[in-house]
Length: 375
Image (tube, rainbow, N blue to C red; front, side, top):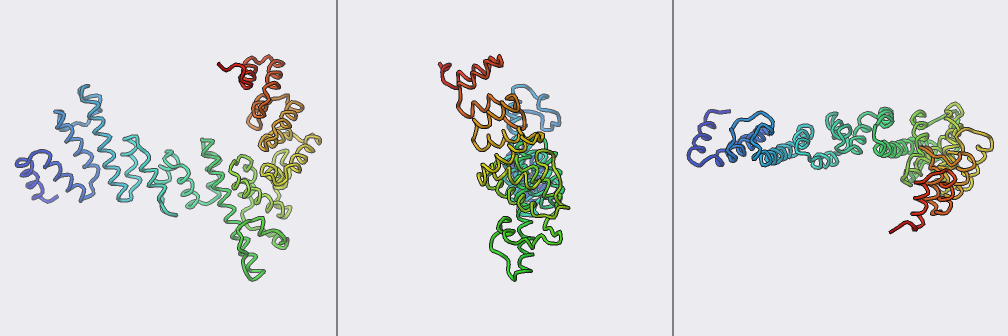
């Protein structure tokens, strides 16, 4: 820094006072993009106004108790200012520590959200995804930079259930786009022009030749992983895309028909049937499909059928299957009998089952469901 700056600063401080001197110093630091020093300058200014030592490097708790709240507020304000300056420069990674200190993640989340494709580096992805500032956008950036394979691995290990479900939807949509593009390219080469649709189901309809000679159009391990996870999805449009992926998988050569755990032993056919039931495309067919698996003593079929019926809103049927084959027990795979009674609005059956099991709280819930215990 040139010597005349110090002379100008000294002159300003002596002739115009501390505030004018701080303004001059901060303007110079802003021009030089020395934002951490702006943070320190604002805190020094506040210490002066509070009658505190001008230089202080210890924790706020070392300051007199009567000044701690005011000084902490000054720290938050100065942190937002420094962080905002970094954001204005597009430097999200250096802005984040200041906003984290201020307990205000929203400006950083908004900046990450505004990033265009390919705009995030590893530091930004770390902030967005692993520090929870904007997990969805962070996962999208990760997918862009590292590809579907790595993204599937990351999603499967992500500790938050809601985040993992959101990531699954992103992956299903990404794979569907990738598969549709590959199919359209193959169709254009054979038929002279690409179809207008981007729907996988429409692209493969009536085109069995696409699968001749064991041809495939996306990485089969990615396809299998996402189809197997697809029953977790809730969004109807994403469920539809997953069903289309399963329908495509059904057409693949047997060499690519990877087996799954029972009752989804024929991976693509079984998952396609389950999804068709959830979507209402073939509700009765899906119920019959998994009921037959119960009759054939296929492990896990009763849980899957209870889950399917519940998702279709057929709660009374789900209850009867649960009581007949599972003793009314539920878990992660499907709801239990009392929960199914609640969903069906059947307070009488709920009270009956609770009484039979000696379940006092279940009985209370049944009475309250009917309205008899409301006061």
